[in-house]
Length: 265
Image (cartoon, rainbow, N blue to C red; front, side, top):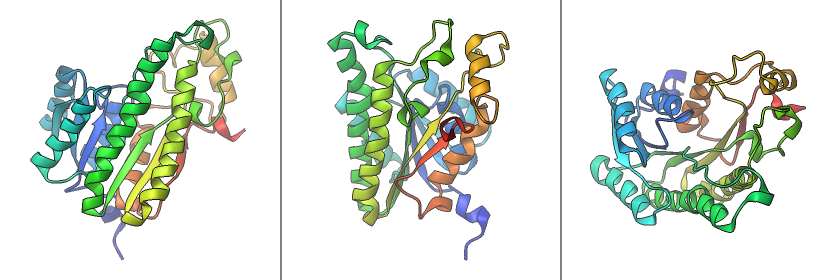
């Protein structure tokens, strides 16, 4: 029987984190690096990727930056090909990147905006999963983790925003629900080949406003969340390492709600 330290150890594993320098991307990248994985941070801003990589490398972790335009199929193929050529394998894929371009309200949205969003958040994500699965099938192992949202499990509670002007976009809810569905499809289809596919659905993580006790949204959100607070930066680190490592080797097709109880009412 393996020790708990061994089960959570990601040493020798190679991980891609899309959007790996951003709001949730950074703690995800940091967590996997701290667990021993070599982390490839991939996004359109190569400079920001390199800054994040430099921070990890200075701390003694293994990290690399690779350009990715998730709206471009050739760029997606190049990312996975580069990773396999340089490091020989791909063990973990974290689909964290998201493009926000469409109008927040369906009645104001154009078809072009909707399609541009889906090109990255739906089609691009599926293509990246396809490329990763093709590598993982040869290895007979792999873990794919999709970062969805509470908006992929429940409908938006519009009154929570009050008069702040904040809202939840229609395209975001549509895409996040689809991400959860794709997670379950892939888990069922490729589980027999030792490829696990799971999802994490975070709740409110808004460090730019969450400490503003006068903000109507902050007040309402805390009141409606059983734990009475917003997510903190390191709340996603444990779940990521759990789902990426052998600690969850018999878990697939699961949507882990990281929401302080928001969806449990």
